Amino acid sequence: MAGTSLERKGIIFRITLIIILIIAIFPVYWIVITSFKRPVENISPVPTFFPKVITIQNYINVLKGGFFKFLFNSLFVASLSTLFSLAMAFLASYALVRHKFPFKLNYIFLIWVLVVKILPPIVLAIPLYTIFTSAHLINSRIGLVIVYQVYTLPYCIWMLFGFLKAMPVEFEQAAEIDGASKFKTLTIIVIPLTTSGIIATAIFSIIVAWDEFLFALLFIRNPDLLTLPLRIVNFITEYETLWGELMAIGLMTTLPVLLFSGYVYRRMTEGFSLSLK
Amino acid sequence: MIFLPAFIVIVFLTVYPIFNVFHMSFFKYNYLSDTKKFLGFTNFIRIITDRLFQKSFINTIIFSAAATFAEVGIGLFLALLFYGFFKGKRLFMIMVIFPMMISTMVVSSIWKTLYHYDIGLFNYILKSIGLHPVGWLINPKMALFSVIIVDIWQWTPFAFIILQAGLNTIPGEIFEAASIDGANYYKTIKLITLPILFNQILLVILLRTIDTFRIFGKVYALTQGGPGNATETVTYYVYREGFTYFNLGRASTASIYILIVISLISVLYIRNIMREEK
Image (cartoon, rainbow over all chains, first blue to last red; front, side, top):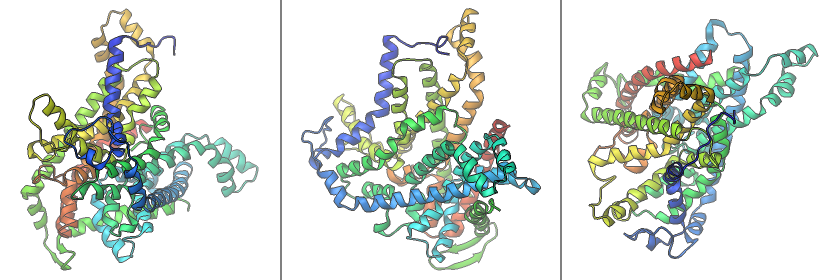
């Protein structure tokens, strides 16, 4: 406890701390200042550590260039794929925790879920592309929501399985004795007891879907349906990169996720290392 | 059965495609010309003797090994360095994990400006202290190294946080007892900390190996596999075969090779996870 633990002081310790901090956040600082520089300043061979003239033109251009469209696409895909995954994963994990399965099916299923989490998604890309093409799900947000289940579903199953397994069975037994139906037990007992776990799972799943790039690249060709990561890549790979606008859209894409840093940190230190990734 | 929806989706999105990839790996199949011809094991021989595939495989191994080693090594070092309590620790830790919270595409954009040959900050610093500028992403000898640096920057915080959390579960009394017994700092680390942290270190190594092995976005955004094929990874190879040349057969065969390597890593990973579960 606090009494026995080490209090760290000392000037050298402080200096190391600051150096580490600078390495970690300097690039973030660089995004911010670059996004406020004029295009001329951004292609100057002498980089400046602070904009000579602060401009918000980059942001205006990004907003005019359809930012809200891409934001909507990203939000739509990330939230819907998370919602579907949560629903399916919750039911499946509950079954895995509380029901008996023949032939060790539950065990095989869980291991497979882990394997899918490990799998490089490109391995699945070719057959999925063929299937989705024939089902007219290429160039479609719904198609993206479906294919994102490859990431979010195993993730949600594994995390929710952990939370549900930690929940004592007694409450449900009591509800059952009182004559509550299965559905009622789930909605009144189980879901409220695991709310914090469900929220944690949702946040991590949204972050995963928000950052997804590979399937978006393969499945979306229509410029109106681009997600934010795709739009950013288009900026980077263009012949003449508009650095200021690139950083502006990058910052706007990252900021919402960055706000979760405190939450993610807390979850990670609480021993969620196994559920992560 | 409430279990069924997830089960069906998983089978449809993962089990079926893997059988499909396996099936296609025996065929010459071009999506554009829509020709399909059974080849037997020919693809397997052609791919493994393909210079570019070998190169991409070696690149992936180098990338994965170097990045994982550095991330876990530095992460462990930092976890030991920042053990204990100090003012503002929580805020410090939260800011330190910023790199892994930033979307990979945004991370790639920042580093692309920093690495830029003419206008990048790094070359500016080199020039201003009288050194020659470096072609970070355009020199074939440097490019892979530069991509590795980006991954290290982005993911060392992950190793740091996990190991730091593991370290904090070790009761302070153990360290006190060790120091009373006259153990010095390095001895304490070697004899107490590392053995207790062993499982966590192993887990972080596995997680980082798995994640670096599937690298795609960074390569796509930073170098597109180039210059030449200096940063071509196996995932990029499959992408190019499948989605640029539309050789679905060859791409499938390359995928099978990836699957073989991944299944070796999976065995280690799953054993580790299942042990923790029990």
